Amino acid sequence: MSMDSAQAQRVIESLRKGIPPDGFVRHFTVGRASEITRLTERLDTATPGALLIKANYGSGKTHLLRFIRESALEKGFAVSSVTLDSKGAVRFNRMDHIFGAICRNIEIPGMPGQKGIGAFFNFVVEQLKRAKYAQSTTFWWKLTNNWRWDFSAALDSPAMFVAVRAWITGESSVQNLVEDWLLNPWVYRSQRRLLYRELVGSLWRFFRDPRPEWFFHSAEVFCFHTRSYAQSWSALRDLQRLLCESGLKGLVILFDEFEDVITNLRNIAYQKEAFLNLFKFSEGKLYPGLSFFAVTPEFVEKSMQLLLDRAIPGMSYLTHEQIKGLLSLIGDKQEWGYYNTRFKTIPTFQMTPLDVKELEELAMRILETHGIAYDWEPDLVMRASDLDSIVRKAASVQIQDRARHTIITVVKALDCLLEEKE
Ligand SMILES: Nc1ncnc2c1ncn2[C@@H]1O[C@H](COP(=O)(O)OP(=O)(O)OP(=O)(O)O)[C@@H](O)[C@H]1O
Ligand SMILES: [Mg+2]
Image (cartoon, rainbow, N blue to C red):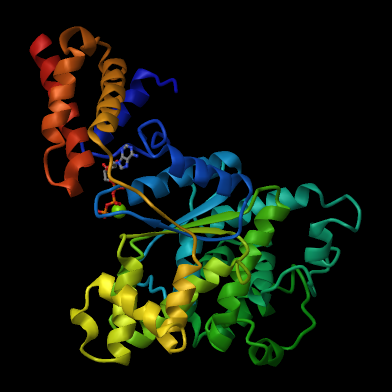
């Protein structure tokens, strides 16, 4: 990868805090060859469904998700990176929260710095319109019912149809409302009349929707939460559909800190719903795109411990090994047996922490970049063996902080050398 000195300075700036910046994650990735091959294959074949990425604290889960983000954007997928946060409004038992978070964080390839559902709509509309004057077979024709905008069989979610149609008016107040609604659908539960008025009724200058207002309410057009969040799923499917029709490969969703459902979701009923949602992502039917979930290695056992402890109180003293043994004895006849089987069907891969050799390689790349950034030749001052010994010392800290600590230490050492030299 070629870098000019301004870019290299930006990179070093970020490495001082221990992480490579967006756009350079792949350049600063070492090891993980087999994982990376498997990930790339998943992207190349656009395999629908979920993949669990398991690694210990500080062993590179977030890094790998960022790696996938970069590769996926380059291969022509839209990407949405979501970090779970039950204390905020990103609860995994609530598909309306998840849908909102996906809309908030969606990124389109070739549109760096523009994030969110607004960028999505602008892109999709422009792409679809390109083919508008072609025959009646185009998606645009189907979506707009040949520009009449009165009815559409092209999308699964009637809310998405209302949203796209309103977006195309180009009115900024309308677009702001569409954006706010899709990012926070639950806030609008009690404002359905406002949505009808602003997004349908008062837009008669642009289109005429022949359906009366009561129809919209009885058909739950503005509801993302009813019928087990059905419309949160169908709208998600439509995101994928619209992206594919616009010439992209589809959508990749990255969920970081998935452990949050165990540690912060607290209520067992919510936790069960969150697990069921994970299974739905994994099946790839309700949402036929790709998704990746970052968890620690004991995630499944910890989840089973929660479920077991509810079924038979006092089980929390069991070790993960004992739980595994118990489950294999009892089989899948109980409710928690069901969860156990479902967890097992989700494809998983486990990452080991980076070893010293790999960290040395990473240090070499930092050294090269530092040289480009400040126009000097650090390898003339710092011998490879010096660099290795810095790395070995830095890598002797607790495994959680290893990689990060090594990156910070190497940059610091190079900064010092450069200063002495000047
Ligand atoms: N394969 C890799 N190549 C180079 N650097 C890596 C690699 N994997 C991780 N790192 C670096 O290791 C550090 C820790 O990685 P990361 O933050 O991704 O771990 P994590 O598993 O998400 O941690 P946490 O459990 O705290 O969320 C970061 O500085 C990251 O840039
Ligand atoms: Mg992380």
